[in-house]
Image 1: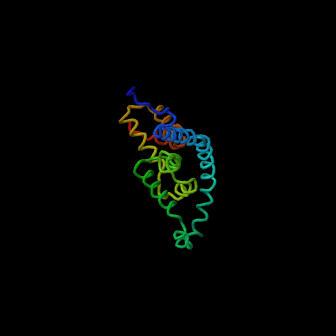
Image 2: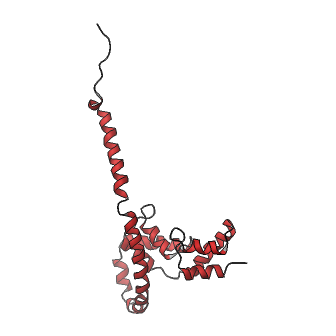
Image 3: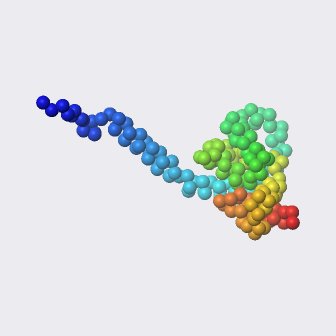
Amino acid sequence: MDNRKISKPWYKIWWVWLIIVFAVFVVSGIAGGNSDNSSSSNNSSTKTEKTTSSKSANTQSSESSQSSSSTKATQKVPIAYKNALESAETYANSMNLSKRAIYEQLRSKAGDQFSTKAAYYAVTHLKDVNWNKNALESAKTYQKDMNMSPAAIRDQLTSSAGDKFTQAQANYAVSHLPK
């Protein structure tokens, strides 16, 4: 008599199917997670810049009329918007980020993951932020810690892969660096 154990074929073993199902979920999550990430983030950031600049003039004129109803408006602001604003204030005041970098950090899947509306609310409701000062502080760090030239600092400050400051803010920062 033969004492060899007869094994089941691989497709009849339950844990093989468990591994296959898990692998399918992982692959679909990776493939499906990046489908709209690059195109929508580029579109939303350019739309935000255009809308932010056009609405900032309107916001200043309507602030006086909104002050009387600010108590009512404060009660109606969703908690996600308030949280996004608090995060934006931290990024602006402690980390010296640019307005565009803050918006993208709030929206990023690798960052805060706020909705587009919450991130937009946050960057448009930031108060008392000196963007030139933020650019200058970032430039000082590049100069001191990384020994970068003024031209390289300007490029880093305005780069879409870098700090995302405006050209005017970068020019201000470079012209006010310690010699």
